[in-house]
Amino acid sequence: MYKKLAPVLATLTAAALFTSACSSSGDKSDDAATSTEKVALTYWSWAPNMDKVVEGWNSTHPNIQVTVNKQDGGDPAVTKLLTAIKAGSGAPDVMQAEYQKIPTLVSADALADIGKEAGSLKDKFPAAAWNAVTLGSEAVYGVPQDSGPLMFFYRSDIFEKNKLQAPKTWDDYAAAAATIHKANPKQYLGTFSASDAGLFAGLAQQAGASWWGVNGDSWTVNINDAATQKVAGYWGGLVEKGVIDNKPMYTPEWNAALNDGTQVGWVSAVWAPGVLEGSAKDTKGKWKAAAMPQWDAAGPATGNWGGSATSVTSQSKHPKQAAEFVAWLNSDPAALKLLAGTANVYPAANDATSVLTTPPAFFADQADFYTIAAEAAKVTKPFTYGPNVNVAYSAFNDAFGKAAESKKAAAFTESLVTMQKATVDDMKNSGFTVAG
Image 1 (spheres, rainbow, N blue to C red):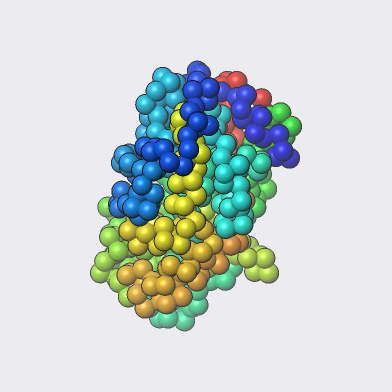
Image 2: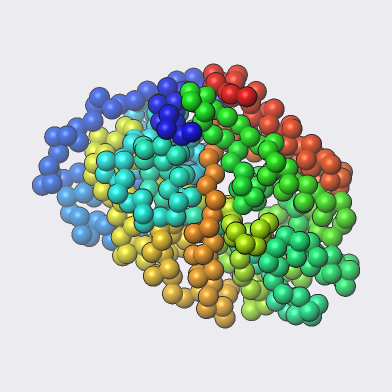
């Protein structure tokens, strides 16, 4: 299914953002470089303290020096890079790129294929992370840097009070939500946030969905598939019954609910401890981490919420050296230790557990925190993003926002029809061929 993905992407345009993109591959001077020549690389990243991480490389590679330029993450980073690519100048050699944005960047000819230099790293990463940088093809558009496998976080004191255990299945989760809310009508096990499409995508991913794909020379869009319908119906049912809340996350009200004990669980990702430490500081020592509730307990799986790769841009004049740096940054044991301890990210590499020996401060009493996280990373299902994730996510916010207000389960599944149509229409209007 994915064998033709690379040529398909190479011929597409990122018309959703720009009408054209230009490549400077003919200007690259890397072939003339030698190991004794001094090369200066620029690296755009939004991860904290990345300049200190890169010092580890610069101190041992005097002929390949990397300068970190701190950037805003998300859409602003993509827009800035594509502007530079279109202008033909100003692009960095190396770019931190969210997994969900890689198809957009590839279709705009903004990223270089570093398969020759980095392809051998495949076995050092979970299959889902590697799929995110290869898009299912033989081309390699970056090396996975950090991942966000979904996990479940809960107030152990509230669970003990209600004689509950961490839910093993989604049926268990629904039962626990009902028990907790019945015992204390002010308490909810969770909330459905209609402003967090990334989390919903991860939940659909766990259920087996992959919203985009490639069929021959065409894209496919399967947002309204059976797996996603199951997830939407499940959460819509909990909202309609009133056993979970439906307030948006990352608001003052939501922060207060975590801190005062009116929200006593959170389906989130491995990076959740940092959020909880800031939002629920008064509850430290009362939370535990667990694997995600499962649809099929016999076949454990999870999805991702967040994560990024480190990619070499198509306009780098030193792609070989840039790829060498990217490989070191995300697979060398010393670099992994710096990423985890200095940049405060969860490395995507399988070897991350060798450097993550101490649990996050907010979970100081849970020695197996990173063991649970590592197992989650291993069972993360593959998921292919498309070139217009921003459109799909915007449609989610609009449609599911209305559904959450209505508190009707049927409205949740009907929202997928809206998402599907908006995504397909945008791709067709932007010049992409969409099958089905």
